[in-house]
Length: 503
Image (tube, rainbow, N blue to C red; front, top):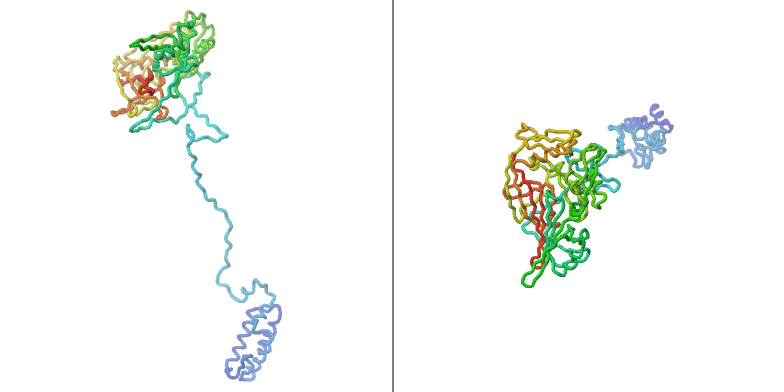
């Protein structure tokens, strides 16, 4: 009991531990094993306990201590009055059997979000940002001098003609003569790679012919007839005419050529002189055109350097000089339909035997074709050709097809303008392309911007779709015809295509 009293008295001290408190109470209860329920009062469980004196004394001690500490409201007041911090009370009274909870780390995890696709509303692909414009170049496989490299821009997305069961087309055709409107008429316009300008004819009434009045105009002052066919415009000079009289009806047919016809022998004077300094072919063309009012709108054929004292302008009209430059490089001259401008183009964008695999400029489905007719021409296929200058200031070349033995050979080419490698190669390829088996196809079809059926341009590569298969060729001639049927204009174009059939 002495030990128990000491233990119980120490419970009031600040350093009292919960373990000691629990041990003291357990010892007191062990000493009261012999107490009966009858001897215990309701308020104090040890007051009326009968037993030996030692047990009774222990009960009195516990009774007195319980009055001070173990009240009904706070059984662990002694424990709570200790110097143990509140956060450690339960840890001292009980032995934890699990580790404390670990704090969840606060971290950021990025969840990628797929960007929304931008609609492709730009005609040449995806529209670039407003602060950045992409420069998309289209490189042609043509040899150029490094100091004169053209920068042609091109749109790679080309319009395609839809394949439909039927097509509804509404043509818009109107004409003026020196700004005065012309009524109902029929017209036709033709051009080919052998010439340099458009030739046109227009059938009009006597009233409209009076507006043109070619008899009252001097040479060089001809009226300009402007004909607009949908989105395309033709301008020709009213050079000649013919009249038609039948059963009291009279009409006139006016014929003429593009404005560029004034560069020819019918209008332009002949030049003189020789170039005393080295000059490029394109520079010669620019200088010849400068005083004429006709511009150079494009040069896609080979350009080359011509040495000094080699080329002369004597007894040559401006057009004679320009045609000589174009023919020397295996090219041709194309006049703009409406503007006073010229374009120099190669007859063959690529060698004739490579046209079938080349990228087509225009693809025409069979559903829009009115008809096709063809004429086959056979000649010996040449595999090589010599190209030589007619003086000692130029260069010579042996141009041949790769993979061949260079035989048989075409007739050698000789010209004063054969002075540099680009022109030698271009002339040789054009000459070899003209040999072998060819077929001249004439394709008749409409002209419609609505269905992406463009008017043909000379030198383009067209792909024609037929039930038997597709084939490609180079456009060498174009004819456009306008007729009035049932008071409505009908527009038809006949495209002449050179199709290579040899190996």
